[in-house]
Amino acid sequence: MLPWFAWLCALTLAAGLYLGLFVAPPDYQQGETVRIMFIHVPAAWMSMFIYATMAGAAAVGLVWKIKLTDTFIACAAPIGASFTLLALVTGSIWGKPMWGTWWVWDARLTSELILLFLYLGFMSLQSAIDDPRRAARAGAVLVLVGVINLPVIHYSVEWWNTLHQPASVARIDGPRIHSSILIPLLVMMGAFKLFFISVVLLRMRSDILENEADSRWLKEQGA
Amino acid sequence: MAANINLFSAWQRVLKRELLLAYRQRNDIMTPLIFFIIVISLFPLGVGPEPDMLRTIAPGVIWVAALLATLLSLSRLFGNELHDGTLEQLLLSPQPASILVSAKIFSHWLTTGLPLVIISPLLGVSLDMSSSALIYTMITLLLGTPILSLVGAIGAALTLGLRGGGVLLALLILPLYIPVLIFATGAIIATSNGFPAEAQLSLLGAYLIITLIFAPWITSYALRVSLD
Image 1: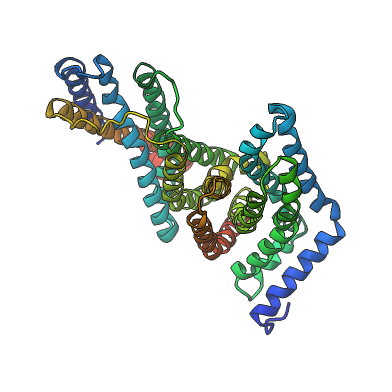
Image 2: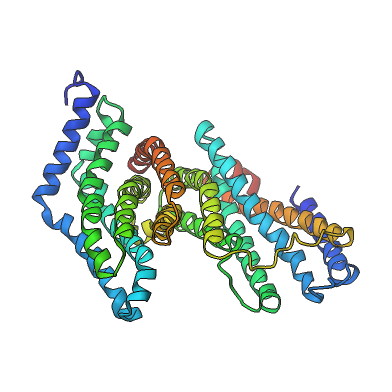
């Protein structure tokens, strides 16, 4: 199944990049820099989507004790962290010409940064625990605690921002999104999802092979 | 412990034992408190002694110092019990572990959170805070430090006995402390600007109630995971 997703991902990524870089018109306010959005917005979506799937898998894993969910969570976390970092970096590159600064303590930026911290905390907890079963269960607890806290953190940050600094920051949702921009955006979204599925499958495969290195079915396969 | 001890007296006994232990090792209580004072006194040295500046940053400084001081004391919460085996006995006892854990968390708050609440007005005065801001600093600390103990207990249970546990604990727990920091400093800033702060205080209280319900339960589960 992996090659299918990988090829589909390559196709949609190529299509999305083509549409985004060549077909979509430059924005009347933002000029060519608007094209960064085609990476930035899907990456930000993915960062939240992956955390949500991890939390779902963690709940399933804790309730039904399915080994595969542990593997999934452990494999998905670094990808999620990468997307979060990608969203932050592209946002910052976009912010420099647009807002004139690399970083603003805006509510969205801050919650994205905190999401990155949550990913990093999860990953360092995983790497600190040697026993894989304990690592998996402790990680699942942490992800669930994080997901309960995420809305609280998000709203508190949003609210903190409105208290301190009134809306001085340009928002994307000002002008309505035209279909010439929306379509590449959605295509890129699909590409990123497919990328996530392919990479997660690849990582899970190697993880399972590593864990089951001594088991019989694997040796029979190899022989 | 006998099986026929009722829940409340078991809770009381755990609390009594914890407080006695804390009293015997008074240094452990003093260290976070001294740390709290030192961190706060570093800020005027770092940013300069202008009273206006200090007054503006005071709520944030006091609260960040409180977060760090609580963080420092968290490894004490389950560390000794893990080594002498008491923790296993606690989990094996017929009473629900989450109730007994809540007694431990409560005693942790009494020995670290409460001293911070008591000493905070003194430090607030040194940072030139107004009297209403001082009162709200105390109220928010009173509402907020239990949350720090409760949420911190989850992290302490998860990182129990791990190498590099202290730094790891900070990495796991500090993001979860952010709402407390925001609500609490928001309340103090609002009052010192002459606005009502009920909204922030209610949110802080709501967060306290949520953590009060869930944290002991999650902590006892995390302890079981760690001791497996």
